[in-house]
Length: 110
Image 1 (cartoon, rainbow, N blue to C red):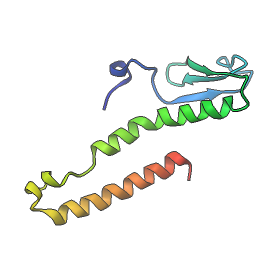
Image 2 (image 1 turned 90 degrees about the vertical axis):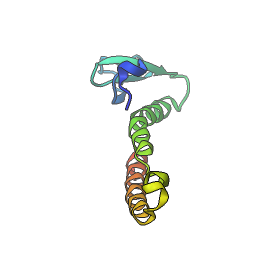
Image 3 (image 1 turned 30 degrees about the vertical axis):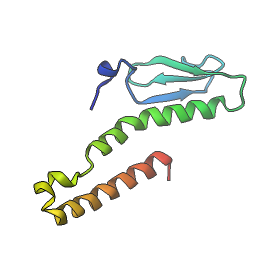
């Protein structure tokens, strides 16, 4: 998995500051890095959807490393004795599929 230093982005998780008392709030929906305590981006306040857009961006960015890891962990049939151990492949696939579905449900807030 890549690190923030490798991708040159602020450390995750990110959050949205919508509270005027927050040091990150700028009359916009501000996205900030929680671990680094620094401002990452702002969504335009002239749109009613500014807060929702910021929340969507934060959710997608925070989920990205988990999704990449899940895809990296996907079983590949050819790695199972050249496809000969197909029963073990299907068992691993079912386990992987269940974990991916749980991850997706968590990301969607279900």
